[in-house]
Image 1 (tube, rainbow, N blue to C red):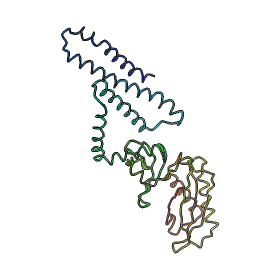
Image 2: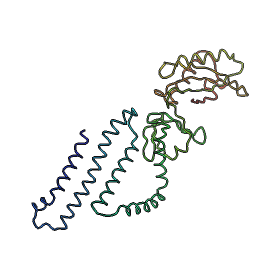
Image 3: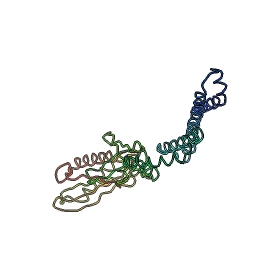
Image 4: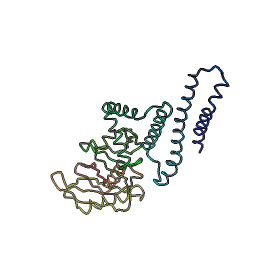
Length: 307
């Protein structure tokens, strides 16, 4: 309630000054010009409208955003919605100033604003598209702050895996596993294919593809890979259930492919960190068992897919 105290006191003070403006003017100077009195009265009326808008926005913030929204959504409402509501409240206040204080028709104001809006909209079409896409992202919620997502590029090496840190009017900010800040215009996100590793269920699957000599016994290789993933599982980051598994892939001139699958929680690990832990465990078990991939200890192919 402390946030409401100052704007309410300001509004009450301005209303008091307006009610007693004639007496205040006479008190300071009996010869105060009539024009100055008019400006004083107009200024107080305009200030009351703006102060009232400030009180309304604070009241909405305290009652709607802080109490009702947090109880219903169980989280902080998006900032973009707060900004839109604040903008609408002050637009109404400015219209009230034009209509009551200046005694002008607001129809002409809105008509002029519409023409001006077309000109500005054409000049700032990319920014407006970013804002519209930002509103769409907030309504559809393909991801929220804290989610790990993958933004797919035109080629696999251009895919970006990062955690959502902030969703703004025009851009969305991400932090990669390298701690780099990535800022993406919202219109790019609306056109992109996005994989959300957390979504409703934080359980994700990592697939690591390894290639071995075809003459090696399949059961032996599979058991070594399974043992590595079981040892890596701690039940919180790398999960015991669903259980890890190994599947045979294609056998070609490069060798026999094995697909090692394990599950991790995106609440604690990024996809890159999960891949790193899985690879470390597998390489350690391969050395212990005396096994090698086709091109030595390091695999000829090591891809990680999530699903």
